[in-house]
Structure formats: structure tokens, C-alpha cells
Image (cartoon, rainbow, N blue to C red):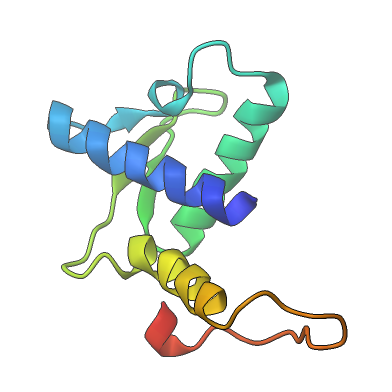
Length: 110
């Protein structure tokens, strides 16, 4: 769930940045009527994006506004990686009892 939300937050950040041609404020990424838990999840996603070098986060003062800039690459591998893994799993078919295994995401999938 968090991976999908992180992808959605990143897509929203990129879209807003392209539209506005300026850094984006954290509150601009939130949907209207967001619950407290939704805001916290969005914030955690931003921390992950910052750690993964997908976004730059700025805050001038403690408890000040959080400003964001997306870090994009030419291939946008982050946006396509999740879909590749899902498609591969769907092609493998529905798992049966006893056939489920945990696998690592290959470098090609990311």
C-alpha cells in the first residue's frame, strides 16, 4: 500500500512542478478533506522519496513550510518499476496453495 501511495505522491509532485514551474509546498500534494492519517502517510512517503533521491525536501525553520522539488531521470524507472513487477506476477498466473514464494525485485524490474 505504501509503495502505491509513494508512487502517487511522486506523480502528483512531478505534475504540479511541471504545471507551476516552481517548488511545491507539502500541503499542495494533499487532497481536499485529507484525514490526519492520510497526511502522515503522505509525509512518510516524502521522507522515503527524499531518502531514495527522488525528491529534495527543504524547510527553512523548524515547524515551517516544507518545500519540495522532484528529482527526475530520463527513464523514470521509479514510475515504471511497480507496473513491471505487477504485470510479471499476473503473467505467472494466480498462485495456488503452497506455490507462493517471496522473491526479490530484480534490477531490471526497477
